[in-house]
Image (cartoon, rainbow over all chains, first blue to last red; front, side):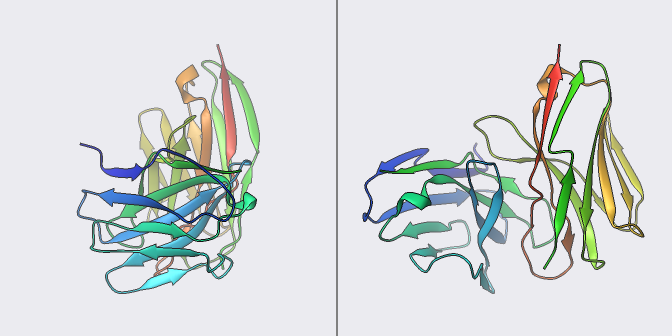
Length: 112
Length: 112
């Protein structure tokens, strides 16, 4: 059973489109995250969410929005995609804020 | 916010030798110190972590040492093997409700 699963694994889309990436965890964790990894391998936090609060990295454009239908899911919706959005996006979860993270296998987004 | 620096950015060792990666952080309130390993095409995976009430922790060929006074912690890999080749990230954390801030990564290559 995959602990943190993301879909799709690859996403190629045109500029201006709207797309979503889904994330589900079956670990019973309370906290979930989205990270963006660029071509230099830098991992940058985008959102953190648990059942009490959402923390948004202030540098993330408001074209990006997290949606959490329940504790086990944190989906990422992106409006009006731009070339610079091309990257690998990772979902992760943890028991609570200062516990180890379990990462998904990533979604490689390519905007053309 | 936390300022995290990792050194070196790249490291090549002969199989069987040891490798050491150092992580320096700025927030003196940090109390959780994990290391992640990212293999090609995969998400980061937690390999070892330590909390601030402990100075060293070992798990088979991997160890982490912590110097809270100097605000740095290090990953030690002994008897390196080709499968240790990966990018390694540190991510110190304080006890607040904040997500992990990752270092910029160290690419380790183990040469057979």
